[in-house]
Length: 296
Length: 282
Image (cartoon, rainbow over all chains, first blue to last red; front, side, top):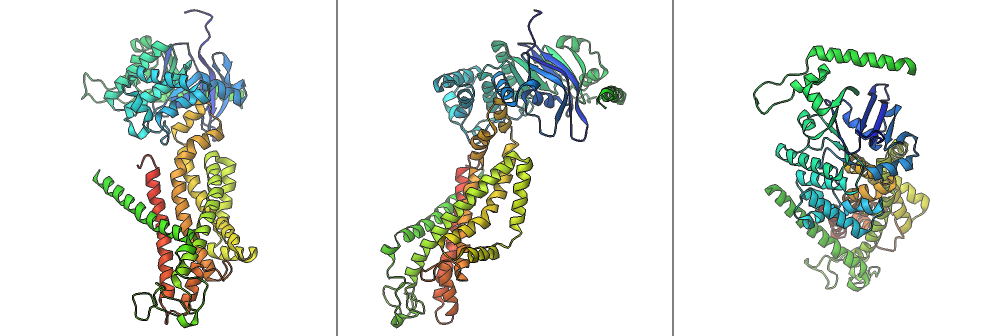
C-alpha cells in the first residue's frame, strides 16, 4: 500500500518477564496499520491480553518489560515520561473490554460516566461531550438514549453494556482500539450483533483495532491481518484470507481443526495433537535459548 | 425474586424501627432541658428509690422511678443520652476519617503503603481494646474529649481493615483499569471512581461504630473513667444501679435497656442504610 504511512501501532521485539524470570512475551513483533483490524489469536494464557495491556500501559506490576519498543503513531512509548505516556495513550487509544459487567463503574450513572472522560481528559465542553455521546449511542443502535444515560450499569443487560462501552471507546475518536475478547462474556446471539457493530463503527470511523480473541470464526469475520500467538510468541502472521486459505504453521492448522462447526455440530472436537505441541515446545525452547545468550 | 422482596421489606422495617428509636433518643438528647421532667441532678432523700409509674408507691412526674439519692431516672437517662450521642458522633467520625483514609490508601496503592499500614493495624489490634481505652483515658485525663480521642484512637483499625479489603476488590475491577487507560491520575481515580463504591460500607461501619462508641463510653463511665461524675452518663447510672439492684432494680434495668436498644439500632440502621445506598443491592 502507500509506502510512507507509518503504522498506527508498531510493536518491535517486545519481551516481558515475570518476577521468577519466566518470559510471558517472547520477542513479539507486530504492526497495526491505520484503519486496519489486526486479530491476535491464541489459546488462554498465550499472552494475547498481555500484549493489549502492555500497549495501553496497564500491565500488572509484577510483569516487567525487559526488551523491545512499542510505537504509537511513531512515538516510542518506552521513551516518554510517564505523564506524557499516559496523556498520549489516553488521547489516542481506547479499550473495549472483555467483561462489560465490571468495566463500568457501578455507582455512577451511564451519562456522566461517558461524558466525564471527554470533558476532564480531553477538555471538551459539557454540551459538546453530551452531543457526542448521544450521537455514538445512536450509532450503536441504542434506541432510548435518554433512559440509558440515566441508568446505573446494573440496570442494563450485558449486550447493552457492551454497546455503551463500544460507544465510549469510539467517542473520543481514538486512532487505536484494543478490543480484548469483546464478545466472550456475551451469549451467542448477542455476540453476533456486537461483532457486526464493532466492524461497522470501525469502518465508519477508520479506527485501527487490535482485536484479541481465541475464536477463529471471529477472526475470519472481522480482521484483515492475523497474528497467531502461542506461549507469548508469534508463531504465524499473515493476511486473514491467506491464513485461512493456507495456514503455514502446524499449530495454526491444529487450531483450525479444533474450531467447532455449525455444519456438523456432533463431530467431536480435535484437540491440538501432541506432535504439534512437542514441535511448539522445541520452537519456544530454541527461541528462549537464542534470547538468553546475549542477555545472560 | 420473592426472597429478594422479603429481605427488602425486612431491611425497610429495620431502617424505620432503628431510625425511629435513634431519632427519638437524639431529639430527647438535644432538647433535654425541655423534655426532662425533673432536674437530673436534684437530690431529694424523701423521694429515694421510687418505683416506676406502674408499681405501687410511684410518684407522678417520676415516670421511671428514682435512684437511691432520689434523682429522677428518666431525666438522668435523657441527659445521659446527650453525652452518649456526642461521644458516638464525634468518636465514630474521627475513627472513620482516619481509618477509611488509611484503608483507602493501603487498598488502592498496595505495595509499601499497604505493607506499612497493615503492619501498624496488626500491632494496634494486638492491644485489648477496653484496657487500651482505660489506659488512654488514664493518661489523657478524664473528660469528654479524652473519651472521644481514646475511642477514635482504638477503633480506627476497624475502618482501615474493612475499607482496605473493599478498596482492593474494587481496584481490581476493569472500570479502574479503564480509567487509567483514559488517562486519569491515580489519586483522581481513587477518589472519583473507587471511593463512591466503598461509601456504602463506610456508612454501615460508621453507624456500627457509633453503637460501639456508646458501649465503650458506658464501660468507661461504669469504671468511673469517663467524664466528671456529676453529669449523668448511662454507664454511670448502670454502675450506681448495680449497687442497689436488690432494693431498686429499675435503676439498673432501664439504662441497660436504653443502651441495648440504642446500640442495636445503630447497627441495624447501618445495615439498612447500606442496602439503600448500594446501587447494586437497591
